[in-house]
Length: 274
Image (cartoon, rainbow, N blue to C red):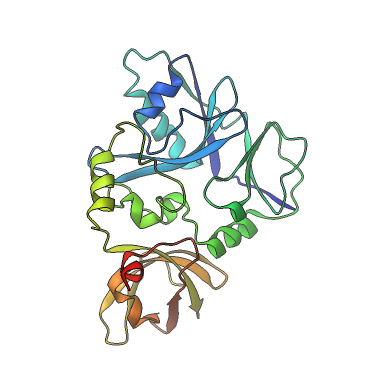
């Protein structure tokens, strides 16, 4: 078992008798069936269907706890609060009251709030505790773990008001419900899926050479731009790449060679038709 404290994560508490209906109409995933100790991964979108933030929603029995990027928490509380209207809900930034951890290999015992990471079985568990738990791994080690699985990390890999969910693997990684009722941004998300409009997406990559800075353009052997680098660490990273350029890999960022890796969980329409 490995457990790491994640200081870059914060927590929002959502309470009140209307909390389920309130979130259900706003976020990309279905929160209506959550039971205590269970989590969903979801996103908040613009009305035009572009990514604003993603987070884990964990049910405690009395509240939803939203595990989100710490720097995004104040704005996220503000954005969500705009939609309260007459809903009987209260939103609070409780980041000072909870410490967010990630565990993988096995769930840690004796924790206040533990929920399996719903994206992949190998991703591990999200752990919230009032005090920091004894850690035997670093936040950097967890970052390497999620990169090896090809999991995006919020604003490090998605661009606010530009990215669409399917670029980040939200379909395969259980981050969007296709059966629940309407939510903000649903129309574009559904149209992208059912009309096959996705042209680029995040891919795990192996990096041979100096790690390119986020946003660095990636080019093929002919010098044509095929995408850009996003987050990375220790020879692994994520890159936003054109799907139709995959057969021209590996790519370059200066002297660095970047090679896409297609994980077992990823579905590519062109390959399904082949």
